[in-house]
Length: 388
Image 1: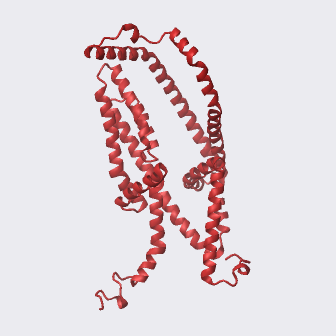
Image 2: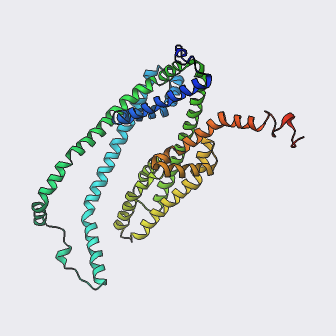
């Protein structure tokens, strides 16, 4: 207890003081959560930067000790290296995207003509003919007539949503600008912040709090290492599988699927562009598109089954110390309670609870059951038989 608190709880018993401290802690935690929720727009970039710094700090600390550089210089070199890689990758991706968009624009008339022929043939097979004029693309006069009829209402709707669009753009720009700034500071001062927080913990409970935090830190770090390994395997398996079935740009799409798989099942967002690319590839080659599209979906489902029933239980259970069935159960419970956020936090929370239970609950249960350290069976004198 802090000095001076005795005059507030001097007449209370030890149990009463513990209850008072627990209630004060719960009230402080509730107030902190309410304030954080009210300021969530301001605290979001701070929280994101702090999470990234938490993940990268071991690497920066290792580089600092390995190279013998000052912490500030190490962080600067890391930022410059990352910026250079992003610049090179951004230029390459921009060039690739522009080339692909240009290629798509050049092929659009052919796609439209093929679609018109397919629709016309379908109509002919069903006994209904469609006039050729109705199959033509909209003319400029038709577009102008549509704009005269609906332009005012469309403009009003756009103006009504302008504030929302500008707010979203401002939010994205602020995140892009503020996250690197906060990240630089947190990486620079991360170890100092940890030492400062540790030094200001209550002295009687300091070692216990530090031990608990280290247990949680180990559980969360192990989870992220396992998750990153799973995402890497998913990216490689998806990219190679899509390449084998003839999906254009399969490797970038596989990397996208692996990156999105950081949040379980979010990799589903990579399926529509993969299906579209499979359709375009088959159309350009003059082949039927149904089989490539089906094979593309089959590869995704196969990789997801491999990830859900083999990779995640095997890798994440090994890194988190949980049984594979416990991992599956934790994911089901997390997804049911909190959706995607619950899926992301399920394994870290479960491994944290297991570590805390092994540290604080299991010893009490063993003591109550009469277990003696170094013996396998309860009972006085270490007898292996009841009453013996």
